[in-house]
Image (cartoon, rainbow, N blue to C red; front, side):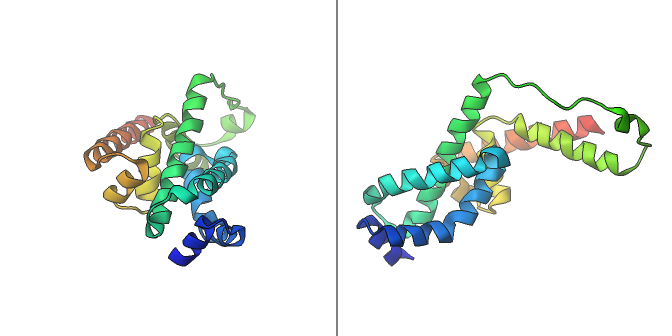
Length: 174
């Protein structure tokens, strides 16, 4: 893979296309975990555009994958911060079907999932990436910290705060 990175650094577009094909699904999944499926495609595309532009500056071809994840995390943060500046309204309101549901049916699981999704959406732009990197991409705390460009202690504290918020949201739903 390092040779392909070197070729792409030399400006060979076909080599970069190979990198996109190889890392594309992983980058998309990670973007979807951080920003959600609606913005994931755009964030993944912006990540690869930025990578193409900055690739000649990458000093260690062996570190391409963590470098690419860091770009993704930064692009994701930008999207999340942009959302925080724009007010949003919920389109979901209880309807007649909600009144028909009895206790203990499948709607309880759907409601719990909705509560968790809402709690995840409420995490800060600094907390969401650490959850997605650690649990979604199955990176160690050290690897997640490197991808985010922060210290291990900071990553641990953000993860702890995020988990605490999620736990409170889920327990409050019960």
